[in-house]
Image 1 (cartoon, one colour):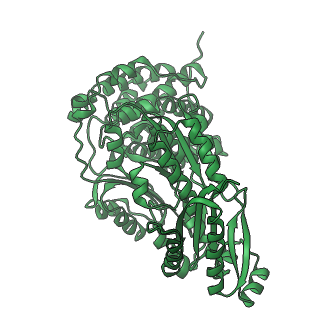
Image 2 (cartoon, helix red, strand yellow; image 1 turned 45 degrees about the vertical axis):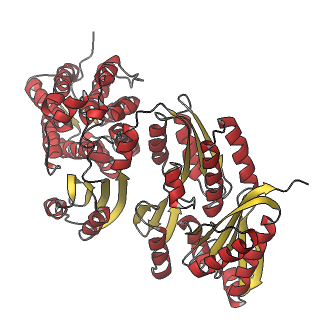
Image 3 (cartoon, helix red, strand yellow; image 1 turned 120 degrees about the vertical axis):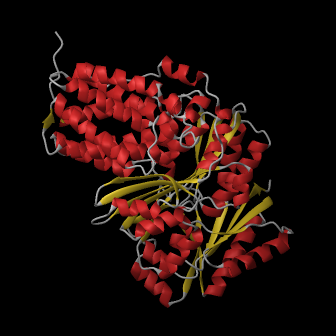
Length: 604
């Protein structure tokens, strides 16, 4: 005889969330495939999966067992990790569920239905312009069904079964409410994701187990007649922009009024102390500036929806090899564009605020802050989710991936790439390569790999050639002051003070393992620049057809001197001169400059 489930407490809610997250994760790529509203940028599944992952992590770390406390942990996790339209709406739904839990240890069917009704209401209130035929409609229909069915019921199993059927009917009706869905021949991706969430919840309540799901045939039926070419491809507001705002007494209505003229798809979720803002806009920085007037901006995110849409629209057969690197790679932007190189941004922390390198903050802005601001600056590796997001897109477009990253001895970035690559090991070849370099050195390796891919080299040939490049690349960094190395902790204060007193200046490089080493030390700023050039040219003379990239940290004049000397000896006029990535500049400091060299060793 089946046991009735008469209540939901904290423990059951936690496990239900795990089941729901698993279901959404399993269907992530299929959700991306049918994503056409509000913008056809193929990321709804990824955004919902990442939001649910944040919720799961918060639920698992929750030290409390009562339903209201678990709800609070879940809502905080949702708010912190919400991604995209659907993620933001989910976050507000869980905020409302937490509010509806009202401090109780457990909920009966009727009490749960009341809490869900409030959650659906709060989710709708979060949008400046709610639309029918979306996740909001399915949420509301599910909530209404629970409310109707819960009266007098004592068993959640029966209640959830009936309500899930109603949610599926509502989902099937979404194309009748939104013309863009009807034209494309799909249901709403966010609504489908919410139904998957409910499927995970219902299955756990029925079985008491967290099932391992597999894609169901009905989803394939839904996308079998998908007509992407019939989707409106005019994107009026290009950037999907988000921020997490913290403060006291944040007025969400006032914030909504201030931001409403910046774009569309405005969603504001949270409470008076912490708010997440989502908007599609052409002015991301205006969002962050306005938000900063009402509190402290803790997180920011900008995604180029036009680029995402263009990639999703590409109906050509899968290409050969994709190339991925991270934002410590210094190379001219036109080369990133020419070879369609995918870049995972590292994270820059300035005081309490975090930024995606070269997405939300430029190198130039970083160096201005480094030079003039006393706030603590650090860089950190991208989260695994950033790599998962890139690889999840490439798996549908390419046969394999070469992913080349900053030296493992300098950063843990490559570990995130390896973890993410394992997730796709059964779907495509992803080779993660430790460059044992950074900045311009990494740029030379990535450029070489891009040229070889374009020339048609095989995956195996590429791995061997890139391995040879890793062995032969060198970088020589001129350090005119130890101030920044002392500040970053690379040089101990007593040693740094003595060296500064004696005007000792080092030339820094990387050894065969990619660790920072002192290549030389001289007296005076002029001599350290001369020594850097001398070492770089001496190494280049050992190579056939050496290539160079020069980078600097607000030291354009010195970098141009390096370029002129090298160009005179090698008759090369196309030597790039760039601002260095913050990963190098944080330690080398303002005024530093570096020369990277790559070539084939002269045969003996």
